[in-house]
Length: 533
Image (cartoon, rainbow, N blue to C red; front, side, top):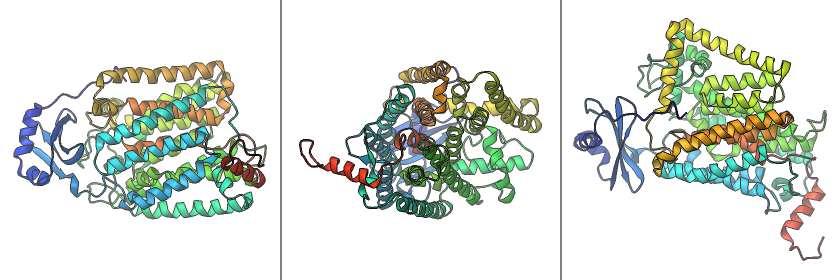
């Protein structure tokens, strides 16, 4: 990452861009009445600069300036109710309700347990969502950093540390319903899961403000239906909409055949439907992984085992930012499903490496996980895993060569390189600013990957533990997000299924029965010196 990174040059001096924005009549109207006290200029690429007007850290107006010093797309951010997605998903009452449900599904009794601290750290990331909604971009990134660093450390400890037993605890749901048997709670959770699926479908497909990513992906898929590679051939107007690997567009090609996208007036409802479906697929994978971690042989349908899986699946859907992310239609939810499935099949090397490879061809970052997936393998399992990588990659390369000729792969790599050169205010490094430390952070991520490879090479049996592997994958992906040039709360969707399986799902013996739940709740409420039982 350090080798490929380079800062975009300013196409015009910042003072010239600022002067142009101040003179432009449309921009004057956009910022009229705003008590702005700061202007920033960021290089978008070699052709555009981004001029932002901020009022005490809040973005109030913005525009782009090109080489000819033309002011493009002036925007009054104060008129934007939500940045993207369905406004219903941002409503405070819904965020509070989903947060409470997340705590109910993930928390334990007594309250003095590390797992409850993990739950609190995960919920702290919701602050970033609220700040971003109100256009405090730098504050949004900085507010998420402490929680992400904590979760990185916890996931790494879970993956690399000893397999120590947790202190005795009881799931919060069981502790609060001591008179309810496990089978009844399972019925409740099934109905709750169905209700959440309906809510996701209504809010997701009913969204009227999809993110530009889904327009870009659908436009690229439409180009593929005409036999044209998207790289360099996407006139829609989404800036660098061709910066994704080829599988991103290929997966959406069937939708483009039914509903082609050639302008921002075209419908992307099928893409919104894919995001909803991906969230439900991820919930299924989380359910199977969390239930499998507690399952005696052949006992997947045991009520206590099913309850553990259902609580984990509901917690994933209840995490407040997930519904917002789904309503934007972004491809990040599809990547979350891919990663959740990869962890689910981690004990089957060929399937796991095949899924990780597909995820890399879809969103690039998962390629960093391939050394980790291959590290514990030897002999025939290693050969099958390598064959799976080749089997997934061959059609992608064939598509690039068939449509783009010998220059097809190079065109894709050139477009993807924008991700390593883009200018942005949405990173810890620019928000503080401490850009000089970014290469050190990137080196630490490479060190984390190397440490994971060595650990699994020396102790290949660790790969049998899906929860620890989920923690390892989550730690690497959090590191990649923190050390990158750009971060948005949409990327939390990658992490939450993995964090849920690693830190927030039950593991070990069967679920606590009602009598034990009553005892745990009593211990939580009774002083240690009390003789009460």
